[in-house]
Image (cartoon, rainbow, N blue to C red; front, side, top):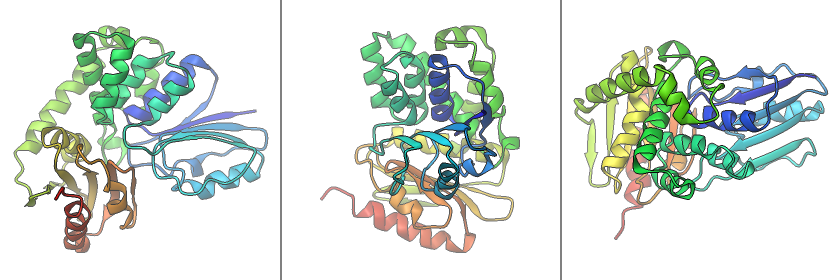
Length: 323
């Protein structure tokens, strides 16, 4: 019988799987991709008696593929924090799904494992722009401020690597990045032993500096919309830049778009950190949109609908402004 591990290629997906396999080692076929590559379950070629674990990709997006596998008698364990919709009642499905704003998939795995590899969950939470959650877990773990900063840099750099419209845009393929983590139960040993993190961090900071030189397309009293050029660095930094803007201006919403080679846009949206809601509602109103209440995205926004997107951004976040 074969097993498949299906996971998002960002910090949350990678660290969630890493925690789980440290606690429950098993041979598995790995299926992942760039961060926006979330319709992954359809790639699973499983047979009756096989099993799979799915981490950090929307159940709603993968519903048809998951239900098809369940109907074949395949056992599915699902950990996620994105919009899921109604879950099927099936004895073969074990779902751990929580869509509240301050939770990520690695935190769900941390709960499941009762904190056994919590340091990896802390790094993932920082990567998912959940600094408050990360710091709360770090305090429970008794970490120093210097250690917290190391895990923040680790999580944000792993997360940065996932952004891009294809694996070719990335610094390192997510499967290779996961394999580089596998020998390390302690993230501090990984940080001390692997030069990869320093290279990722340096590239991330360089790309952020380029993004910060771009003048926003739209600046409103409750947020901003910024369009980055059709360049690999822009696709890599899109989500990280959106996170950075959210941290700098926690009372405001932010949308960061990058131009695709076809002239359309990939979109990352961040709700105000002080009022983390609305991002998923905004993005799901457009084809290819999905995410969670505080952070969401659109795979391919038609360039002809840019004005419509800006109007929807204003409607969703303008009404959330405190009176």
